[in-house]
Every structure is written in structure tokens, then in C-alpha cells.
Length: 150
Image 1 (cartoon, one colour):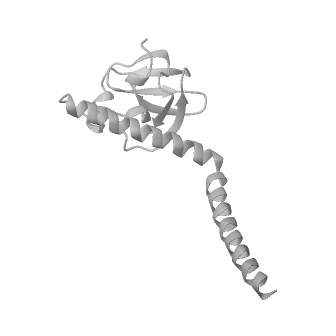
Image 2 (tube, rainbow, N blue to C red; image 1 turned 30 degrees about the vertical axis):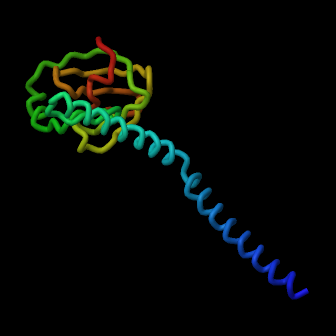
Image 3 (cartoon, helix red, strand yellow; image 1 turned 120 degrees about the horizontal axis):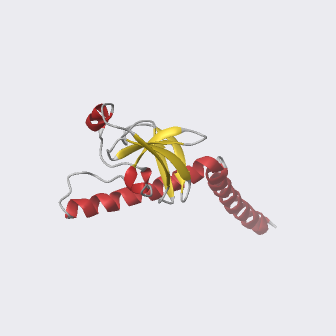
């Protein structure tokens, strides 16, 4: 009987540890589904950013691409001259699977919202790489290369 007690104790310990690991994994993965979806998209965008950055570096480009996160370099200086440029308004569609709109014209700004493939947005274009997009949910800035032509 003592023999079975030791076996039972070992099996119970293994089962308890496996259960704890399982619960921890499930809790982390399903604690906040919206956050998980955004972080997956962000991870995907980061991989795209690195690939495009490496491609542009190989081609001799000076600007670092920021992928579908909607950015090319930090254009704060350009944004200061945007105020004097002529602004045209148009309707365009999103070409990227997921595209982060920023609160200002650059990757250093906070994310204002997320645009998805084939979404239609109002665009205020002043001729620079960053354009202002207006949706019913938010207003933000994205790189124009991720939007259809006028």
C-alpha cells in the first residue's frame, strides 16, 4: 500500500504542476482578447518594418521604413512646414492589412486608431508623406503609401 501512496503522490504532483502551467498559459493568452489581437498585429507590423528598413538600407535609402504601422522616419520638421502648404481633400482606401493611424505625423506619436484593408477614409493631403485621415471613429495621420491614389 505504501508503494501506491508514493506513486499516487508523484502523479498528483505532476498533474498539479501541469495544471498550473496550463492555467497560466490560458490566463495570459485569453485575459484580454482585444489586446492580444492588437499585439499580434503590432508584432506583424514590426516584422514588416524591419524587412522594409533592411530593403531600403540595401538600396541606399536614408529613410527608415516603418511598415504597415503607417510611418516613414520622423518627419517632425516636415510637419512644421505642413501648416503653410496647400491642403487637398479626397477619399481613399487603405491598402495595408492593418494600418495604425498616429496622433501626429510620425512614428513617435501615439496610436490614434487602427485602419483595416479596403476601409474608406477622408484624407487631407498637403503634399507630404504623412496625410491626415478622418474616420467616424478617430482622426489621425498615416503614411500616404499605404492609401490608394486619388
